[in-house]
Structure formats: structure tokens, C-alpha cells
Length: 181
Image (cartoon, rainbow, N blue to C red):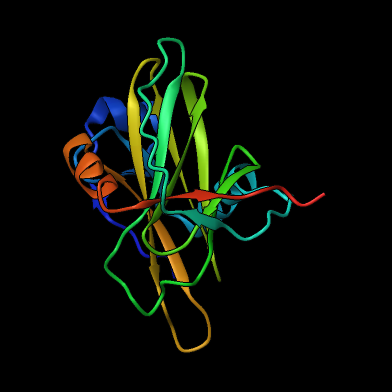
């Protein structure tokens, strides 16, 4: 079962994204997660890729926080500082089937994407995916929630508003990684 944080969409937004969709986030932008498991499975296929990436390393001496370029959207992916039990569990994030990075507790990474609709996937012991439309020159903050379980960890994604995203970023360290060849 997927964990979700659901907000209501306007009628116009629901028509744009499909009748069975629901918005996900904390008051900034609209991300889409479908109500049916079959639609969510199809979304995970679009969002999650087949590449492998090495585990992240943390750079405590670097905390770059660039601004979004005028022609791209900037995406920050945050792993918050709250859950000590899941601290060392690595969580990967893919966009449109390509792995973009990996985090562990109290880390973040960032990347740019072209404007438009994109499919985001977080993976630990499960996969969770959302669809989000991004605009050029804007910055978005995605939070990878991680919880430990009896047999494996679980993840789900949420969109943070700019105020919350910037505040949390102050307490996190840069995560660096490399793609396995």
C-alpha cells in the first residue's frame, strides 16, 4: 500500500490530469498521484528507470544552493533530519526513467529539468511516483519520506512549499553519487 498525502484539485486541474487523479504536496505546485493501483503502476514504469547508481557520499564542507536558470526548472530533492532509524538507508530518485541521484538521512541533491510535465520516482524497498508540471525559472522542493518497517524501508514523495524547502535545506548536507557503468 502506498502512503499518500492528498489535497483536492480544482475541477479544471482534475480535467487536465485525468478524472481519477489527486494532487499531492504541501501547498506548492501540484503533483499527481492516481487513485487506482493500475494507474500508479503505469506511472512508476514511466518514472523509474533501469540504471543502477552507486550509493551516495556526503559532502559536509559543501552546501551549494543555486538559483533556477531562466530556461529550466530547478529541483531540490531533500531527505529530512527527523528519522534516525532510517538515516543510513539510501533512497534513489529518478525522473522520466533516468536516475538523477541518491540520498540518505540529512542530505540533498539538485538538478535541472526542461519545463513541462515530468514523472518523479523515489525508490527504497518500494517505489513511489508522482507527476508534476514545472515551469522555467522556478525552484521546486521534493521530500523523500523514508520509514523503516519490519522487513524493508518504505518511501513516498511530497512537494514542499518554497518556505519549508529553504528552511530544511539549511540543515542538510550535499549528497554526491555516480552512475554505475
